[in-house]
Length: 492
Image (tube, rainbow, N blue to C red; front, side, top):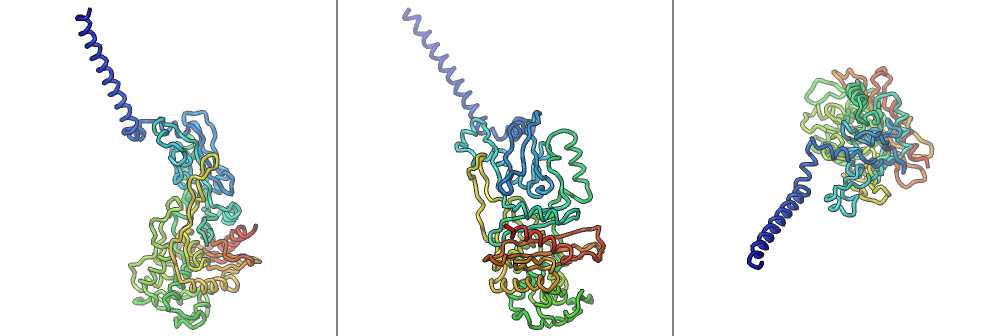
């Protein structure tokens, strides 16, 4: 027994060791797949497990004024939960869409990890979630929007093409972001043929309802850019007294050119900066831009945020541009918001906000904070200064000039009882030989008479391609919309 038992015992030990090696190899391979190759398997287009899991639970919500403007409904399909939207067209330029077929954009895209429940910050044990492939409930995104301001902007634009951006000058909190015409993002939720038809129709529509004109479309800012030129001239000492003649001929021959620039109003020859700003004398500001020079004009525009290519709110904002490779004639036109000068409505709201905030441009942001599904804060957006656009003393002078525009100039339609309002109107030419219907602009800020500082800065642009050319004016078309938005913010 003893002699025969020893070889048997040895065989058993060898077999046990071999089985242990196989078990170890199996565990190592499973660990390699779970930890090393998991991402490649997850991202493999043939793997639908991730997509099924993504839509297997309700998505977190986007909140405006403490209330959700999004939701989820159980479709009973494989991609189970479909996105729903309350007042979809009103908030589409903010929320964007979340589609099982076409993905996400705007806040739905920028905050996708929070809303889908995949952000590691939502879990107290993120490594455990990685190992178990568990998914947290979707978190929420709390926006900075003022619902009353958003509604006022949307109602003011009505059926016209255009956009409104409003922000709080002292913090950069975005209070309204509207683009018209708009669309209902809920049309893109689900997987049936109606979704594909809606996608095709929306993308092929001539009026581009899916274009976010407030942050993704740039326009020639026209005379609203004169705020930037005035700031550069005052900071550079080219103008030292608001009421002194500027030695500006009218008409003004563009340097090195036979083209003569004219004005829409009388009294612009040698006008003071105050008069030229109040009544929008092109000749004065074109010459001022040339006198300031391209280097200082470029620096002045950059101070407000022009040529900034990294701005996100948190989704991407198209850069506003001030062309720096110009001759003097082109610089003159650039300085009155023409030639290659382009701006988003958000950028022009930042210009008005800088005047209201002692020359400081605060970084605009749309998200106040993100939270777990039960309301615990995950992250909060800090308030930062993006640029110092001008000297504080210059900002004081520009507030005076912008107030004059509303009290006695082209911006009377923006006046609000019980508040100090500053504004600047603009009519921007565009198209071949300026043949297109001009864009109507108005930028402004407002401070309640009993408040310490301005509460809101607004930019409005109205494209209104159906209007007669003579019916377009910043003071007539855009100023009343700006007034309604500012009043909505100032009203308790």
